[in-house]
Image 1: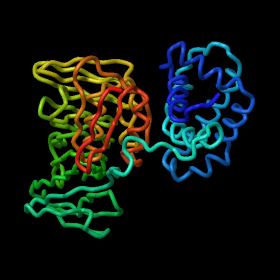
Image 2: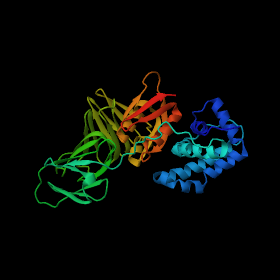
Image 3: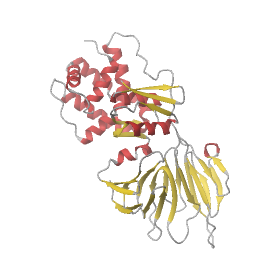
Image 4: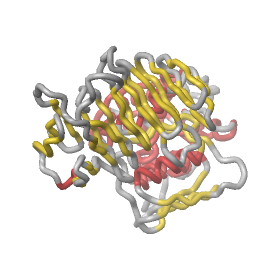
Length: 398
């Protein structure tokens, strides 16, 4: 039987992410029933094959090794026509982590060994691509001076009202309080990332903030000796707050306030999102929105919408902070949310069909990859993506 490489790759991913129907499962199990095919799969996912592709997965090496073992075990278990068993939660995550690797490598490898075609069909994005974002930001000083941090050499950046501002390395700012016998004047700086940018800052109190793309954080160059430590956020940021019981840390957003003492949490407050979402990873935070107020515990998320608060429990925090770790992590994520994330990171306009029910996407993909590779993985969910020039992605149902 002649196997179509692209179609087979799609089927295998659907098979191991429990998205395949009965007919598709039967096709995959028929393929795996062949000793030659099983041998080729094992060879393809061997240590040598992974070493060859190591640059592709430099930021996810540990996940790859775990995924490889899980996939090989699953293939061995299903080497007959036996019905696929439900995936355990940990194994399911491992499969998702390897999904984009499988898609690219299966397509090329199976085409070579199992079909008679001489060249791989060009994907819908052939000839045009969008490169991933990176560590880009601007810093607006208390004087109004605006610095493009990409152009600023490592070292001291400014001396700002009680703090020395340094750029120790690309993508990082560090505020260090100066020794002084008098209270310095309160001055404010603003760190802003463009579309396709991310940046980290160590604030004057040693708290850490990591900004996602198209985000802005305004903060004092020295926190006052009395009262809360207050910053203002638009967009999205991850906070790792330095503990100081006498001075609560407050994040002010358009729809409310998040207050913490010593904790780590993510705040998504983009203007084009329907709600502000605060997700707690460690510690306890208080979220105030309109007339409502609530305490969050690890693994919970507060959703602020139309002046009211709703608390979600058992949230997939890995998916929420995947961006911070360099990944797109979609866990049954709606199409419109996926498209907004891609739009911000690749600085591109996305046009897609809004008629009828849209799919939910489940995938884990490195944000370092060009847009074409990310879109190729997402096409498993039933949409075809086309990059049009350098300013637009079009999505249509297959």
